[in-house]
Image 1: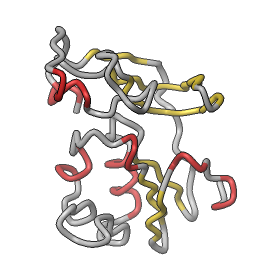
Image 2 (image 1 turned 60 degrees about the horizontal axis):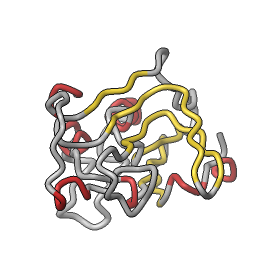
Image 3 (image 1 turned 90 degrees about the vertical axis):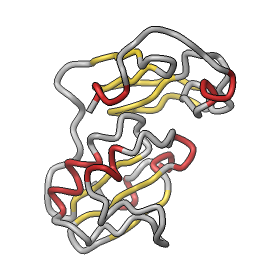
Length: 152
């Protein structure tokens, strides 16, 4: 995939020689799998907060794939494209969103988006439908589900 092929919804690009990491602020709900996975690459206390060259490209790609919201994506300079999970899975997070992984086709008011990972709202309070924006915390949404750390 070339830079011109990257979907606009992937967000801001952070480029290193072997990998480009994309971040969509509107999809991030601060699950922090990236920060726990490679804190030297993903550091919100530094500007820019993504230092894509601070670890090997393969390690960065592996941590990006852990992002359950789809806020992070990547392209490798010389390597395979990010592939969807072999099986589509949906996990209801306790008091939170639905984490969906697989070969996804999401239909929104803006059109259809092909995705590999997404956090979908189930509280009804999001300002970024169909995605979770963290509103469940503000409105006190409660529902059974897995504990978020069980998703990693």
